[in-house]
Amino acid sequence: MKRIALFGSTGCVGRKTLEVIDCFKDEFKVVALSCYSNTSLLEEQKKKYSPQFIFIGSKKNPLSLEEIASHPDVDICVFAMEGSEGILAAFAAASASKEIALANKEILACAGEAFMSLCREKGVKIAPLDSEHSAIEQCLLGEKGEDVHKYILTASGGPFFSTPPTYEKAFTHPTYRCGKKVAVNCSTLMNKGLEVIEAKHLFNIDNDQIDVVIHPQSLVHSFVSFKDGAVKAFFGKPDILQAIQYALLGGERRKGVMAPFAFDRFMQCTFYPYDKKKFRCLQLSFDALKEGGAYPAYLNAANEVLVDRFCKGGVSWEAIGESLEELMNKGSISKDSSLESVLETDKQARREAAAFSAR
Image (cartoon, rainbow, N blue to C red; front, top):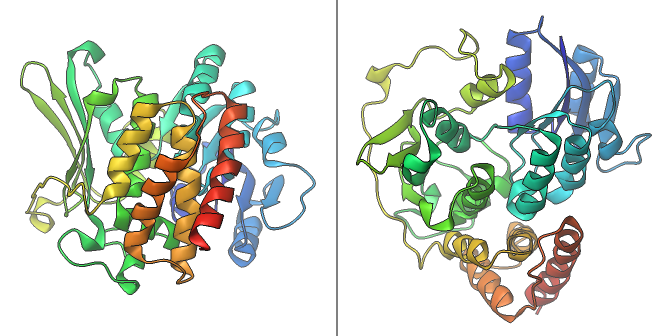
């Protein structure tokens, strides 16, 4: 029986991870749960799973996330939290050679180079929980990396793909249920931008091998295009459950939480290019990837500050991308990709974005 530490257990990915664990309860034991502030749901989960460790981000705790992630009683660390708070815990888990299942975008998006270097050193394999990266991994089964032409992530386009942005609709994702911050990031396509940076590090690929297409139905989770003209598409219901089950079961295909795909319910697939001017956050992610170093960390941290201001009505939707672009162009950002540089750049970006958005 594998012992799981689930960081971010009260969020969407965390709750779905527990669905998978419930389906295979003879194979997994929950030994740690964490949340930031949803203590009422965490209390329900605590009663059901009787974990050895509890962590609440908004309170003082006996053990830190890093201590839990590296604890000898933990076999698998599932990072399902939001934001950059999971970075140090992920490094602790990798240093202790734990199995890692990853949905926390910021770990790879901010510190991908240093983190993947550590994982290679320790022999740690990352199991992606994002449906897009899981789809690429599954499309690559039986294939050689040198035969790939492009890795193509799909994006729903969010609520504003074909309509003008409004404050209210920014919090509603067209095909997935998610929290406010994630919903806003999906509306600006920043969420997809972070996935682009993740893909670069997760699959160790060239920047120009990554592309994004808009696919409003969210049925094709990713494509892999090959040098001989062939294309593999990973087709499935718009739900992250399959990716989670695939990761936790180590790639085994077994009957589990999801029913077989019903084609009669999902009959339409359309694809479009994205508007680089309207969705400048996605383009800025490609720019940060090209610059390298701590640029992606700066991008993520500044975006978090601006999105928080947007949620509080302090800036417009358009100003998120506009301000982010101005900050990145004005800032003196480190080219050093070490963990220390990433953490310092994170603080720098938050200071500068807070001062900028308060003008």
